[in-house]
Image (tube, rainbow, N blue to C red; front, side):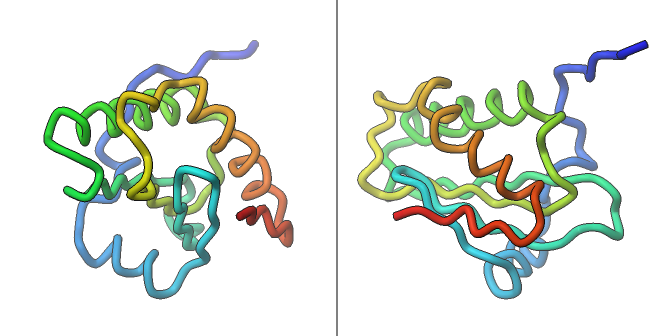
Length: 127
């Protein structure tokens, strides 16, 4: 029987400490989409993937930053079955306008990247 995953994102599935983000930035891989930079590093010892969002003030005011984070969290919540056992930090590029961010954009750019991350040895990097 296929049991659906709950649409929650518990604390153990989030990056919460600065050192965890720094490990992804310094020791991980960097992949690019048109609107996002995605940093990944191995978290196999934990057994599941964790997500971190880094949306800086370059992305706009608090309303704009929160919209971007809300859409990204929603994307990962809906696609948590495809998430590999990696630590993932998603950062929007500074040209990204918050009013253009929606779930369709996130799916169009990040879903192929998640698929590439689950297949070892696949580059998955695009300009």
